[in-house]
Each structure stands twice: as C-alpha cells, then as structure tokens.
Image (cartoon, rainbow, N blue to C red):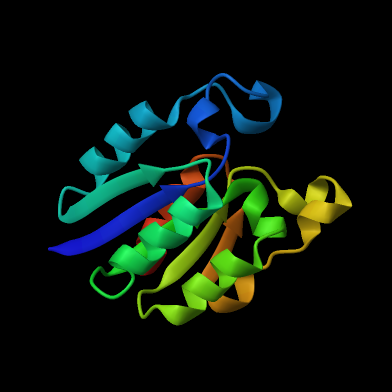
Length: 138
C-alpha cells in the first residue's frame, strides 16, 4: 500500500473559517475524509503546523520512507529557503499545492522557494488541488 502524507502549513488549520472568498468554506478535516474515501488503496495521512521547524522536521521524518508528500506550505512557500532545502534533502517526491491561484494575487506570492525541488506545482483549483497532487504521485 502506497503511503502519502499531506502537509499543510500556517493558517491552513483555519480553512472553512478564514477568507472564504479565497479559500472556500470547507474545513480541511472533512475534505481529508473525502480524500481517504476516494483513495482507499492508499495509506493517506495528514499533518498541519503553523511552525516552519515542525514542517521541516516532518519532511525529514518521512522523506526517506513514504511514497509521496503533498505540501501546501502556505506563506512559507514564499519565504522559506529552509523548507526548500528540506525537500531537496529527501528522496520522497513532493508536489507543491496552493488552493488559490498565487499568480493572480500579490506579487510576493509569485515566488516559490520550494518549486524547483518539487516534482510539480498545482495552484488555483481549490481543495481539488490535493486530489490532483495525489493522482500525480500515484
């Protein structure tokens, strides 16, 4: 059974509550249950942290043993060289995901410090981007 971990970064614990016009009104916990039902053949797990170090630690912890990581690093995408380095350091394929189309937003969101070390990038498809990323990994 393939193992895939979804990692969500800062403020994504507030999905369904924050800025609904950008992020929608569904919380991630219920969406994650939908993903688990859609992909019963996968060992699908979820981790969320608002802390850059915790995200790096989780990538190090699983990045040599699982089949894929779906990573929405939130604002750390645009600021964290360290998360980009963590992705480069592990063997596991990582797909960067963003709920919104970051290129239609503020200019500082147009730069990703993660993308060059990822297998691919998906943005602008709402929560469905996670499903697309999982399909890309399998």
